Image (cartoon, rainbow, N blue to C red; front, side, top):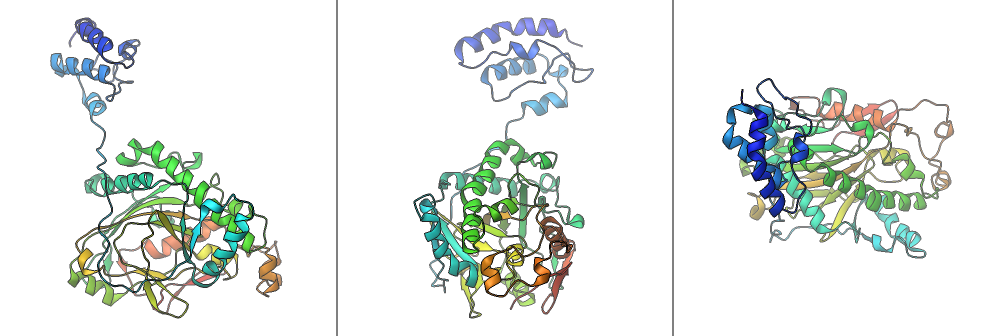
Length: 441
């Protein structure tokens, strides 16, 4: 075994040179309390920072002079961080598609005198008829959005072994982690082309949930983006919907509080490229009109067309990308809480236009879901009462009902805990009195 004291003494000129020429903290603190990470190593690399140039100079010297003193843990410490290459949106399609006309809510007016009330009026028709709208001027800069797309794109390019390290636990209805594109679509011989990575809220309850390498290395940035989306968009939308329902402004925000346990998540998603034949087979089997499981969904603009909504008239129309904005939709638990007054949007993803067929459809989304403390019973809204939607049973607070987390996890398990996607036309999902269709034509 090499004499590490002598090794470090020999390295002192390198240390001095590093500290003299680089405006960074010195490296001597690494060696103040030498501890062996293995019997073969007499050097403490516990606090080694590979991004610190002066520390790296010393490390390179030690590697050059004493490679046999290093073990696998040291080599891992010296590994460079995963490179996140910038991603940019592809070109818009040149095809003339039948686009839906969706309301646009300008959140910069939220804090103006009377602004919330005016925005609530604008939002009313969207949430009660279609369930789809867009928001602009959210305070979330597009550079931050593109950075999150880049992180997601980096993850999907990782080896399958890395992606599989933390899979979604669908047997328990948990949707945190990686969803692989491994399920067969009926008997078509075609597999799903969707991959997902779902990152939970940055709260203590989820501290021990496994993080993939790209998430671990960029976690502070991801967590801040996660929280800002809730504060600047989700929270404001719940305030506006509470105003529509004539409830206290914080009523729905409290039912979906960021600090409470819930299955909220930031989702990186990709529709991998398919051939026309594969798309045809998959779409012939099922085009998958569905509603989302939670309360609100945010979808960031990515330019590859394919998302369609079903209008109140029963027509399917494409959802247009919103420059600098976010497309939003209401979902099942919010519809349950309002006895169907707030519409859970029916939507699907279809074959992209021919000029975008060879472009992976990268997605960035946020899903807001009610907390573990939120009972799935209709809210005490004067509006719902006047419309005759609330029954005596709905007002009975002693009646047992599932929590938001219970319902969502039961739904996730029913839809995703399987190896083959089955046809679901004409079927419904029901859980403790809550019922939703599985499929919409």
